Amino acid sequence: MQTSHVISDLILGLVGLFVFFRYLLKLPLMETVLWEAFVLSVTVAAFAGAGRFAGIPNAGLVSVFFQNMAATVGALGLAVVSWFKVWENDTLDNKIGWSVLALGFLIFCLPQVGIMPALISYIPVVCMILIAAAAIVALINGQKKLGIWLLAAVLFSALATYKDSFVTDPDNGIDAYHYLIAISLICFGMAAGRPSR
Picture 1 (cartoon, rainbow, N blue to C red):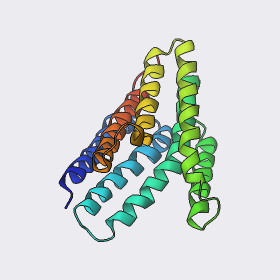
Picture 2 (tube, rainbow, N blue to C red):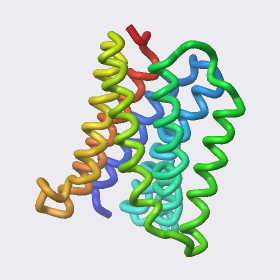
Picture 3 (cartoon, rainbow, N blue to C red):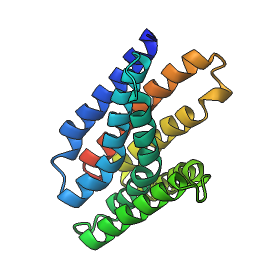
Picture 4 (cartoon, one colour):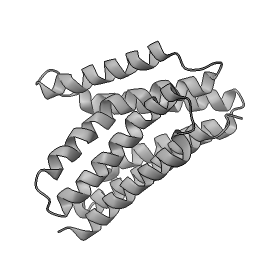
């Protein structure tokens, strides 16, 4: 049993649940679905990861499945809903929302069958850039709270993604990843649940 990893994964999972119930459930359905495509995928991956580090058989497979789901469907959902939040003229069109989810599932499935396996590593980076761009537009438009929270979320996600450049111990790197993603989830929740201005 790797106790520190179990604890950090459990904390990440609990933060994901907190963000979901505190910030996302009160949003219109399609917005909630797009935010939660990332938040709940990370949450399930974290709880399954805690099970893996605790020695539960097959929990690692569940964790990897939902990590890949977060990196594809979830990342695309975040990018689209972040831009929607910046524009915020009307309710998010269901056709757009479901199309984004369908595209995300397609991108998720392709590497699973051996087609373009590198997609899973590129999609999160592209989506982080898109979210950062949305944050900058929000700041330019005077949507300070939204812009700051989105930028903070991207910053902590990027730190988690590239943690190996500043955390040399692999064991500490796993825990750092979990804690940085937890902070990122809180920032995304604040962006989703707060007024834009």
